[in-house]
Structures are given as structure tokens and as C-alpha cells.
Length: 152
Image (cartoon, rainbow, N blue to C red; front, side, top):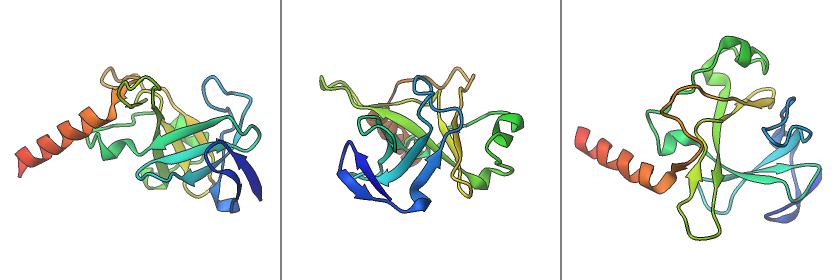
């Protein structure tokens, strides 16, 4: 399948890259079909709308910079996308890169949870006060490295 993307123009994608969000994403509820692409710069990914070229999100695995991150959501929410065990879930945070040179941030309050097998996903809202919509990725990464070095 060919998809027009914001980052790479027209790309050929495999069906395994398709992700469906039955309820859409917050603020983008009417857009439910996406593809997941590796970004040129690791460890980032692109979540690209299949329907609208200009709708694309940069994603990151939040555990890379917050090893203590916890996604506490109910079994009912997980059942909505047929996740029966944590091993079946992929967790991503949406990244914001401000144009004005401000720090790049990740939304840890509203993670994307994707069923590895069915490639069906949802965006959750975590109630834990530790997780905000804007976590400075580089500052958190430095802190995680310092904490990891201090534990050795």
C-alpha cells in the first residue's frame, strides 16, 4: 500500500505497519487509521495518518528516558484492544518539538497503547500525578543516566 507521509513523501508500507485506533487520538478522534514508521533519527518513530498527509506524530518509547514509568490502566481499558497481558502491549509517548528551540517534550500522561498482535491501539489518560503532558526528554534522560550510574 502507498501512503503520502508528512516526513518522507509517498512511501510503500507493509500491512504489518498499519495501526488502528478505534476511538482515534485525543483531538483527532475522526482519524483512526495510521501507519508506524521508523524515523530517520532513532529512537523515534512516526505515527502517520493514512487519510491525511499532514497528520503525523513523533513517538518515543518512554521507558528509554523514564525507566520508572508506570502505565496503570484498568483491565477494562486493555480489553478494549484485546490486551490480555503486558507482553502484548507496545507503549509510546507523543513527542513535541517546539519550533522556538524550547526542549523537546514527551506526553507521559496520555500514552499510546498498541496491541502487538492485532495492531489495534488506544490513547489512555493516566491519573498518576507524576506523569504530565510535557516531560523534557533530554533532562529526564540525563537524570536516568545519573541515577543508573549512582546505583552501580
